[in-house]
Image (cartoon, rainbow, N blue to C red; front, side, top):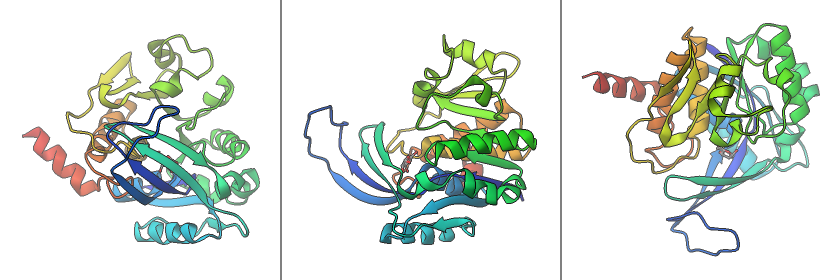
Length: 296
Ligand code: RIB
């Protein structure tokens, strides 16, 4: 069984579903409200676990009711939570999510996640690095994420980085990542961006671009494109996290970048057909069933 370490956030998602996303200064009526388990780190952990990996999550929660429920859920999803710390007098991460038709917009408040940084990572470094692959994003303390990237590079551990929510990052740091997964908004914020293809070529196989219904781009002996699944998207929340998790699983299994993207593309495509961020993430059996049908 493959092992994945996720250093990342744990949030409670407050989800408002409507026909279209509200525009600035507009009030609209929605048709559904849900409180869901979320956070990019937790989502990746749950997705990788459902895809059959052994997952250790490194992160922080608060001492509020929602944080406690989050922890129970992670345990139920077979994620190893032994290294999730509870911070006293702190509220856990929260996200306000608007889901429209096939799109979403998210506001995140870090809470405890923002306090999970260099010191906490350093104290668990050996354990983090002992996995086949390490996954991280940018919802925990940024200095901590930068430290993690440096340490994975130094110790030759494959790190898959999804710089989301995107911030200014140096090329020097990005080049130290094993793989970088970005969407169409994030790629434009990478240093020295001129065009998508130029970036893919520049990072020479390290960079993967996901564009929702327009598919996935990667670089393996030239720029390669993979079509997205022809499915009806009912909820795209967590699709990026599913892609990241599946990509990590495939890389840990020894697949090369194109093949890993193909697998991740299927997993993310199956996710968007279902409601619920984590509950909609496919299991390995569901993915295999789909792949078998697809081949017929
Ligand atoms: O990627 C989706 C996630 O982004 C949500 O679960 C929300 O918590 C935010 O972190």
